[in-house]
Length: 112
Length: 112
Image (cartoon, rainbow over all chains, first blue to last red; front, side):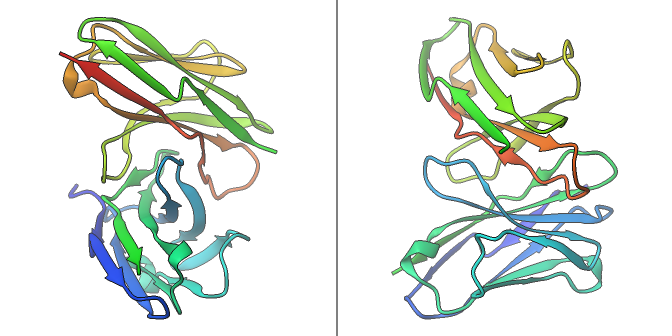
């Protein structure tokens, strides 16, 4: 069990650029979640995958955000035409047969 | 609407001074309540899952308890390394996605 990994750990981009983050879940976990967290707030749910199927997407997520999980393994989260309000920590979590979610270290996005 | 409220927002203790953190919740059928620890710039680290009123879980200096309306995280004789933000989250019974609904956290500082 190597835990959940996320790359990159930090990303600085200019407004209007596209960015992509990667998450590698715990290998036997079929559930994968993306959350976003801003300073002083709890994580906010973005989207959920069971295996390769994206089963739920938050209404708070604009059309600029898209996520994929090809073959039910790693997942990517892409943000197009970034805005300063997208600056946050993006967290990935995975879960298996129990209800517990295990989190990665996060990707810190700064949009200038 | 499902909601989680944590108190206090911040807590400063002297080493060895025991205290409790509160997490009150409203949810349309509780599936589980979760406690996580989060250090600055890192992802949440899983501590406990509680499922039913009266349940208790312990780990080192931490003990989590659950009632029908709230959960407490008791910290006995804390050490400076216990300094962190403690997050509480709930899962609703309805739906299969098991997404987490989070409180804002309690920021704990333990002075030597």
